[in-house]
Length: 316
Image (cartoon, rainbow, N blue to C red; front, side):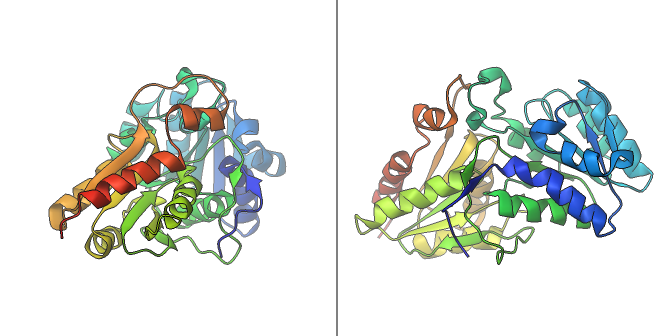
């Protein structure tokens, strides 16, 4: 089920998946804000031009049009870069989609510092915090292109607002076609009894690399892919706390308001254990995406350091 021989960008899943779903009879439509080539939504527009609406560089209008289509009974997808969606139109998302609970699926590409050379102004590292503040949104951060395609299909087949974050760079493909994404379920990528590393998005393959590094030191590291942030798999989190006694969260996002906040809140309520949080703590900068992971210390070595630290704090 798990592989890493090839690479692909998670954003590459949007257009082909929408085409497939439309061919299968789902009443999907897509709204674009002049970035359809980068988000790959343009591929859907090429095959289904009557279902593809572009509003130009106007993200607030993007949200309003998508909400209107959903109110008319369509399965409405809207896509842009994460720094624009929700960054430029949070009020519209809140009022037009979240509060009425409309059937709109926001697919935001170019999330995190891995957006790369475009620099801080284009790197959305607070988007998950914004979207998790809206209680009606399901929030998904897939680990690879296979999981992204399945998350998009899950969004299309489940009524209500969704936010799916995708990325710009080509990253290792972790899953093969036997994998099945489940909304609200974490996926165990590696068993372990000494510590649990929970990760999302591009950081999942980094967490796996850290687990390999730690195995060489005799540390048995459990790795959970927490792609579904809302609904969160609280059962898997609490099992990790009870069975391994320490947790490290890993995300290409601020340490506040994302994966780390969700996991720590869950643990604090029922099963407190030592925890550490790997993520960003300042605005981004320009550079190649893999260089930026090193610049912000989002590396296997950093994860390994944090793992050693939480293990040292375990009681008993």
